[in-house]
Image (cartoon, rainbow, N blue to C red; front, side):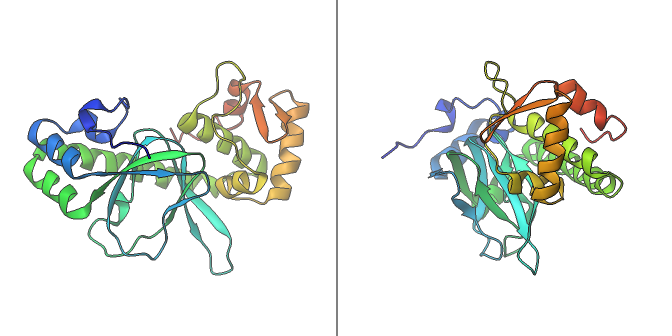
Length: 234
């Protein structure tokens, strides 16, 4: 069984709490948080479940997704080391989305009451959280706006640019730091697995990527970015 990690001993320098919460407020969160370890494919929280609190990713990869009435999944956000999960439902009693681990993931869980207490006792933390909300909302609005204007080629290229931005690329293997199926890529791109497969064939012919089983090596990240250069989401 893995031991609990105190905030002051946490190796993650990207954590929103460690970057923006200090002194007694940080000590309070550290003393009351719980560490959860999730295997790839585990559901961290499920759409429609009672809202219990906020999650902070210490290490790992997560997709935040929702399901349509016919069962099709739509990925609304990707999250990695240091990111927040579940914050969009503050003030409500149900989670709006599913959060699913894309790799083995370690998250810290903070109950809603503790998180609200921190916001009320630390104006600076609350203000930085407000800025975070504003930035994330703007990026979400731009992604929705541009996806309606993109063709399939641009949607798939943008998905890879987004994946690279969130998870990065292994410097040695040049592969994405997360392993995804064609369906998962399609859910991110807002298209179908068949269209993704055809587009990956084109990208491979253009020497933009190289596929090895389920690993995708990025040969020309700049080339993928150029496909969506007219859409400034980042």
